[in-house]
Image (cartoon, rainbow, N blue to C red; front, side, top):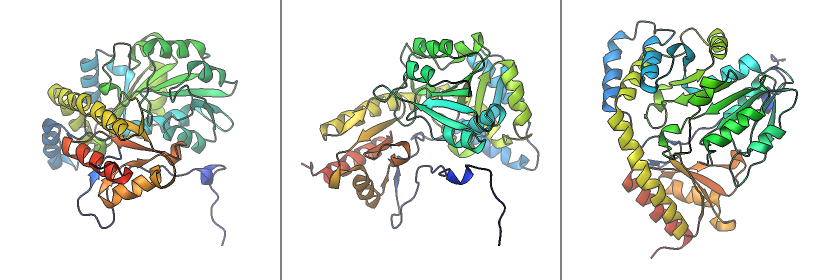
Length: 364
């Protein structure tokens, strides 16, 4: 029996695998695998979700007008230059669908987010990965990787899974080094966690240039990962293109209402950031005290490097799963000896460190 043939390259794609949330034989798990906010969503967002339940029979506003206006007011932006999406993952796919065709190229950092090569390959594009400097995007390498076929340069800043970032002047240098025909996509999913003075999420570059777009999400610090709601800010011409390729109702009414409420709850966001500012460095210190190497991070997660052999990352992962502690395996990103750890609640963080001490034989 013959089957319909997918487009060339599709079957070579390894499906994206998110962080696990359950373990066989374990009733209660500690989920530190998906960079979710340990504080959960704002109570105001939860109330907004419940209030929308009676209106589930109504179509959502396809243009997410109220949410775009709320984002514009919150950040001092132009609402017409904002587009909302089914998570920022959808924006990545839409950008590739709109700008990348068979034989075209995207440029990205060696350990950038996996959705970039997946989205480009679906469109028949070629992925060019630039080498990094100490697991941090290298501007000169990214610029050097650009060819006549390059259509998009993706930059996750901060980067997932390394947690490293480029300062604003380096991002501006990257933009200036790209041809005007190349679209610079600044993926700022973790921007709300960064408190460094030399960081910019990219709004300033979008305001000055027509070939820059910034993507954001409500999945991380806002705790709305399950509702899938994201947004982007870009030049009018780019936003118009994305509106032409997105679905007519790509964001649902419940997610829109929850995002508006979450955006307004500044205290909840501040609490989530403060929690991260305390427990991320605590985890880093504890991991180092156990003899593990840790990549410095500005996000809500850490990339932890393990020795090989019976103390390697996969052995550690298997040991922790039996304890009901779920981390993220990093082999798909090219890290055979590392696990990514989401910052959790205090008791979760302490349980993880204690379990790793047992695994490494450092107990007591």
